[in-house]
Image (cartoon, rainbow, N blue to C red; front, side, top):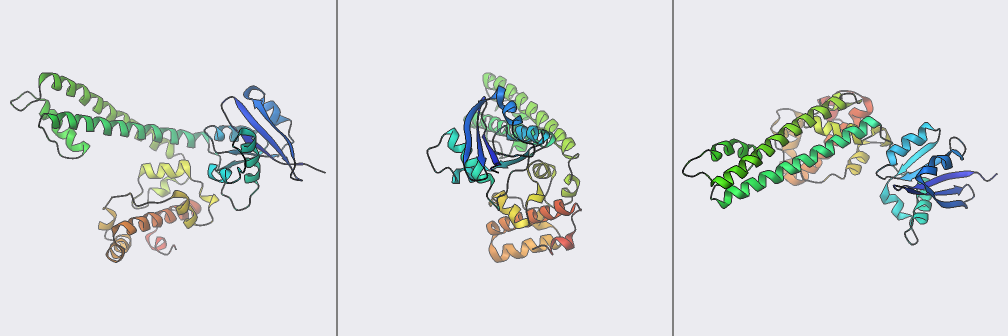
Length: 314
């Protein structure tokens, strides 16, 4: 009997492409469905049918919805779908490529996020936007001051320390017009500080409800934001070992923190030894990989960080 192997869905805002791929490799149908008729179309398929979709802005929402209806759902990473798009790019070919990709062995599919995980991620993105706005605002203030011959030391904290004194009237004070403008920008900067702080508190409160968050905070170099990123984005069970998680993270040498190497413990000693041997840039990547593998182990075993066990991980 020729049964359905997988239903591939190319998601969109209002019109979805639904491809039905059969066990014998034939395509039973590949047609467009409006958003209003989408769920009625899905209900026509037998329970526990495998439904696949590409990772998209709404894929987690639809994944949860279809799972609640009794279907098996796989969210396929975009880069893998592209590898199976052999013909001209259109919705029908994309839906067929999703079907083919979903049946490939050895692929890491995207775990369906809970509402809480998506909330944490939304807060993190909003916080990042605010941080970028604050940086841009600080740079603009610094540029206005530099045009008046007033140079402020590098760093937002330094700017915030010096700005109140600069805004006071005096012989070296900016003009009245610029001083009024800087007062307005200074208020905006303070408001962003408050918003970012409130966002941090909300991220922490939500993250504490996620499994593994408290364990992650016991790792040196892992703070609330990094821990929140892992509990909202990573499902450790989908990786066989820590190396897979490190590769998935796409680690690159961008971190510039030096606090870890000052630690008087095996981690600090491990880091200092490798800096002497390999140089700081390579060691930054090595440290990031090391911490990521430790994170995988802690999330998998649901335990706190243990220095002795951590340095037995390979």
